[in-house]
Amino acid sequence: MELRTLPYSSNSAYANMAIDHSILESVSEGDSHMTLRLYSWKPSAVSIGRFQSLRKEVNVEQCKVAGIDLVRRMTGGGAVYHDSEGEITYSLIAKEEELPQGVQKCYRYAASMIIDALGSIGVKAEYAPINDIVVDGRKISGNAQTRREGAVLIHGTVIYKADVKKMFSVLNVSKEKLSDKTINSAEDRITDVQTNSHASIGELREALFNSFTRGRVWKEMPLTKEEKERSLELEETVYKNEEWNFNR
Image (cartoon, rainbow, N blue to C red; front, side):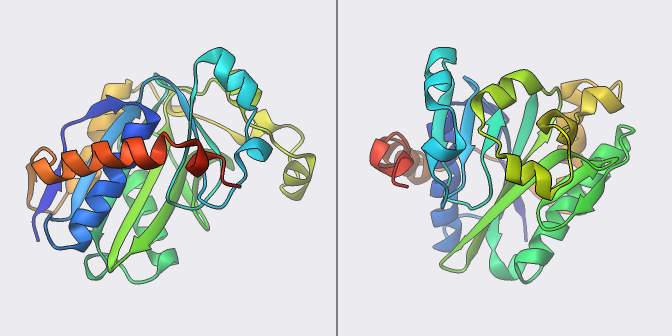
């Protein structure tokens, strides 16, 4: 099966989530092939999991002051700070039968691609179930997924340059969460590519692309007209909608 790759892009949080949602629908309906996106967020953003409380997880007022977008994902998982200059995000959307079966196996599959990419630029990483990738026990990548009508969306981040002070000024990290992980401070949980490699962010992006496409027939293609129109609709009616973002 041919893999469609989309051109790299930087988008608002609302556009990024709407594009993923639109492609998931298109793949589910059989109108598009398995699709890989690599992208970034402009401006910086915080995304929260489908079942989280935005006000509980995020310092909303600090985000407003800093000009940081807030959006609820359609996938589960925790709150994530997406620095506009400091990470690469990927999305892989496919029919269920095109990926390993089951949630855990899909996470392992995606993790193997990221670990391979990091290894190629000199970063020794490992999978930390259920959905993290770590370097010396410190998180460098988090991932999330959802399933709709026979299709799977799995997406995640790879931190290139962590602005830890900014990250934890906008995320509310509970003492209980830190205690459970026996970590003294939130900052001790995070690492990045820049700390562990001399690779540029462009080289990280290339490594991720090469890893996800290796052994596959692939072709770069833009969103279809229908996907673009649907993503614009979803952006306005769902992802910019406060009823969606603040519904918990």
